[in-house]
Image (cartoon, rainbow, N blue to C red; front, top):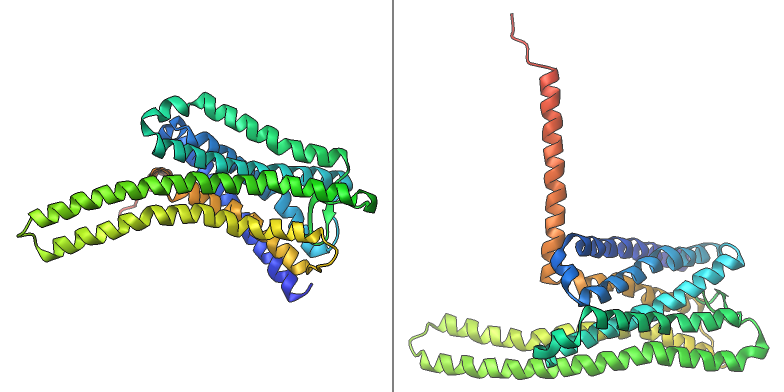
Length: 337
């Protein structure tokens, strides 16, 4: 193995371990907190978490084996199943992010009618659509034998081995990425930009009230005035940073892989196998970033996983104290004669 291959294998191992740990922690928070389970967005986050976990235990290990052995790991049947799962899970995770953005859009733009427009039944219908949408493409690919081991990405994924099917496969790949990546990106941009517009409007209203208050309070201390102005600046930047993170991570992680898949269809451009695996690793990195972007860095999840850790530590300290007490009772101190 070359140094590049060793480095790429190490990156895949790190991505796999971090994705497993982070998504398991999100799942634990969901099971531990009744408040999180009551929220409608929790269903979308749970679906996204399961997609990321399945990706970490199915597709990533085979990519690691493909990098190490430079050949298809396992038999054809295993590779076809993993390729089916990879296509399904990638599309499902993209659509789950789009569903989360729609939920935020309704909550911010239509706050008074949110609970009537986004109920558990509505969320279940949206999830049913994402599953049907996501399953349709790998079902078609499996029926046409367009799943297999692709050496460019060292992965079991969409792959056409028959030259006579090239035109049909090109059309299929274009439609697939248009109705998964492009559709999700359009929904993300539309909904989050609407949310940003509303957030900026509210920020302006708060800024006007703050400035009027500062003008009226003539004797206010300069340091207090400065803190108020600094909070104004932070408030304006907070919504922009969050929305930039949502859209930015989606584009950064998925766009290189999607563009590479589309460029690969052209026989004119030669693509390095190293770049193919790097673009695949970037797509895998979304399974690592999602738990932090959508869950673990939010206040409610922070509080929940801190409570879980404290509970585990407290229980372990109680157990160690009990064991120490038992050993002390078994071996009582003897008086010196």
